[in-house]
Image (cartoon, rainbow, N blue to C red; front, side, top):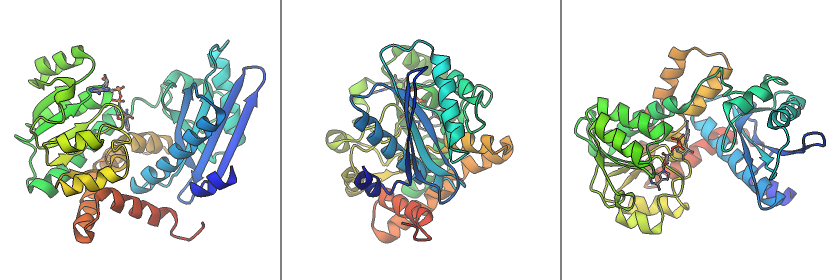
Length: 343
Ligand code: NAD
């Protein structure tokens, strides 16, 4: 276990169990160099406790990088609650988890994630103040979409040399909470939209409301466009799809867009500019973290817009070094996280 922790440069791992509610939970705290660890709480069934620990550690590490490059005084953490086939009282389970978080005395702040809802966060909030994305805090998705818009603007400027998004052809893979909001923003800027979603109702709505052109699910990669925006699940850029792409830019909201690190080099070899996912999709995290800190809406909007400037600097450095934007982003994050040589 300690070897695995060292490999991930993990500061701490906390295990909790509560007999009354059946709670079994893990909190991974990756790095608190810049501030208390913040990251979502997953409520999922895992094949083994080892899988759950590995998931918590991997995700906590990702949160450190994301928060650092978003300019937040926040570290990276993640919680996992092991989902059992039957839970007698869900509210009691999350309340018990709230007491666990309180015992960490603010070293970890939790939030909504896969399998959890703002109602679950409300239960946690009954026992600790170290929780965000409660029903009171609001949906982060529109803020994520605004950050992605700023990022697309930066990538289009860097790769196509134009400031306006008017007439820019964007393929959106996924029209969920973020994807649809992004489609609305792009349409307002005069972009031309090509869209696909597993849910045909969402595709029809985009056709009717936004004049979008529908695509079959497997046609998204080959459709000629300026920007390919992955806004569905992770892993959409793989060995097969990277060869099919006919775009100049990949910039979207999805987490873990590249199936592995090699894809970043392959995109670069094909002269496709990639906006690193955890940089461009940090708008939701900024909203969640800054709302928790009591920052006002106007300042939060400005900080979300700054995602564009962060990407400007990553693209510039990438050009200067001849390295992919993904490598440059990781290096910039590591400089912030390990600048005082704590590890
Ligand atoms: P969502 O579940 O609301 O929407 C996802 C949409 O993608 C759904 O409509 C789904 O039908 C569609 N989809 C899934 N697979 C697809 C495929 N193969 N082809 C086409 N469509 C597909 O999720 P969301 O909140 O909009 O988040 C989208 C992505 O952005 C996720 O990867 C998420 O992790 C990431 N993200 C979201 C936020 C946020 O604030 N919600 C923040 C950061 C990152």
